[in-house]
Length: 379
Image (cartoon, rainbow, N blue to C red; front, side, top):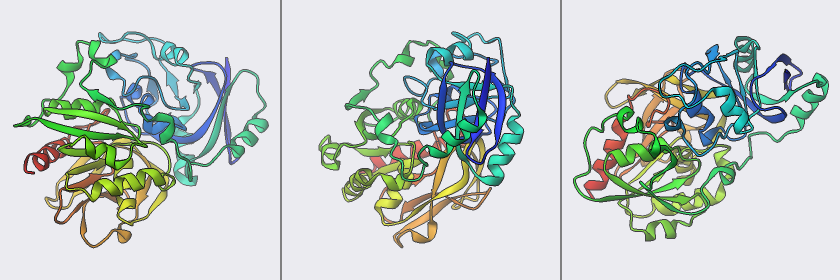
């Protein structure tokens, strides 16, 4: 079946349908990861976005129950150069195409993703529409121009949990016997019982797996939960998760983070949590031209000079010159010099812009979970 991808600048590509039939719209972005497409599909941070995979061959190892980062795919659409017609992997439970169709994700294949990526890199990410069947490209371009921009969009309400829950609690992925075998062993385990309160702005399951691997019990709270409610659970530490959309469009989350920061408790934030922490401290955020999305981004840790290869997925960044004087920059992106991490100078409050749980991606930043453990145990 024919499929068309149309962008707001008037560019359009004709390919073939590679997922569910229909039409979808969102912000078209690209991800440079060579593997991990199922984790990317189910990462709630991609809500409202159509993801282009720069790796040309996608789907060759199928899908597996243990590789999901949430209950269902959260992307608005999916773009591939060459979708694999077969799945070859001892863990696979099915093919990528069947998975996309089952979850009603519209996808397009057989287009020049290299040309598309070069366009997005030069012009910046833009709104787009994927439609299957016989469609008029001009009409789709007009539809792309009419959808909301990512700036000002609160997508956290779409992906956050409706009710608080505890982890571990037999999540759907626990049925996969390979999950435990494939998890990276923690540097150490907690020396006493530790309870972490985690704000779910679009939280990935591997974050919970990592905290649990370090010996923590986690209580996950909705993004709208008041700070008083979270702190009333008497956590040893508070975790601020990743998530989608514009951080500046989340005044309720910023206010709640501000309340948490005023308490005497260690706080660790990543990605959107990092941005919300900065906003709660009075800093500002801005939209990147094409964002950072991939599993190969070099970040320099300033205190050691060590370079970490990191997994990233964000379209906004914090302006470092707007940070208050009582925090210090700890990590810098070596691609474009943007801020990748900061911590309070005297209190156990720190955050990074990237995804240290590495799903998908390298494990260079797993030490941050151990540092969070250290901060909680030292209280």
